[in-house]
Image 1 (cartoon, rainbow, N blue to C red):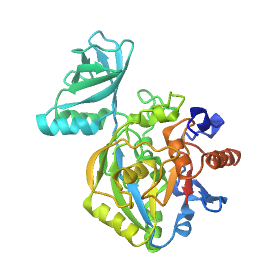
Image 2: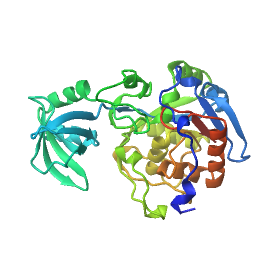
Image 3: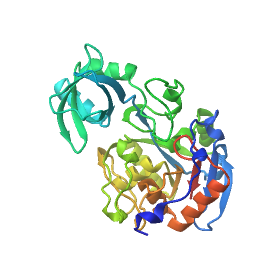
Length: 354
């Protein structure tokens, strides 16, 4: 249960989705009942009939920023910069008037402290420190840099979605790789379970008296960091900024008090809810850094059901869903999805586990 090899499965490469469905809610939905272990094959558009009146959906309204920039070093060598802590940069901007944050840098040689990176003649970044392969960069221009990033940056799509973001960008990704309810800038990856929702589907859920409440967790690059330790308990989980408003917490706690189900949309919502919950499953509002690592043996306090996409082998997210259900039965469900040719990962199909 704690060996990394316990969380692998065979996936044909052609099942890794490269584009979303033309209509988001037309994606497939693997439906799992934890009590009976029954598995059925549905469409995401069936969700209003699968959930219960009174259920409370909790969604993550983070918005993916165009966090990847291309430029040059003083020597003329090409450099690629990925901003991995936009929230840190915005906090620094509010305090000092300058945008400074942690970044990943790809170049022929890692730039040294003090190096200047050039994006345009006016827009530059100075490397303030380098530690464990992460550069802290001070970008010129302050608020002007934020505007430049939004206009010139490209979306940091996951590596298994094969694009060349510099020479062959796909404009549709700017819309497709956002949930329809995204509003708070800061993520470098989408909360992909939410990509299946459409405005008509949300209206259909509301008509069934299935409410929806928002929280924010800015998905960081650590979501793609593989587990490299043999014993999964030794893995160091990444931290991500979260925000849960007092109003949202009140609605979640009311659902728990009234015996209504809390249905988390995506593993990011799951982690935030469980991180902020007490032993009775009641959550506390606030902001901070979420570093909760969920793997089998964890006792869930707040989440009663979850909607999630299919996750990479040996990933912390596969461990999370295995903790919510059962490791072997979850792997059996993945095998069934492969056999039925479900589409996997960010632009792929979804699961409802209840």
